[in-house]
Each structure stands twice: as structure tokens, then as C-alpha cells.
Length: 57
Image (cartoon, rainbow, N blue to C red):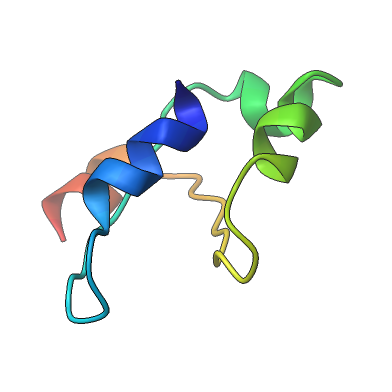
């Protein structure tokens, strides 16, 4: 389902979108690496420490 969400976000070459995962376990737990490996190749990953500031952007 996680990977499927990316397919629904970007359907054509001109589409743009952003997926934000606010669950810190993706970066801190071993099973989080499975989520990151499921991302499409070349997907930029940014770890955000201050979620409030990030969401306001």
C-alpha cells in the first residue's frame, strides 16, 4: 500500500507531488528500511527534525 501511494501521486511525467511520512519509526526502526527500499528508484529522502516548520512550508 505504501508503494501504491506513490503510483497514485505521480501518473504522468509532468505530475509533481510530495509524500510526507511523519512516523519517526521509518528512520529509527529496522523495519523502516523496508519502507525506504519500497520507494521508487531515485526518490529523494529528507529527514525533518522540526515537523511543524516543515508542514508550514
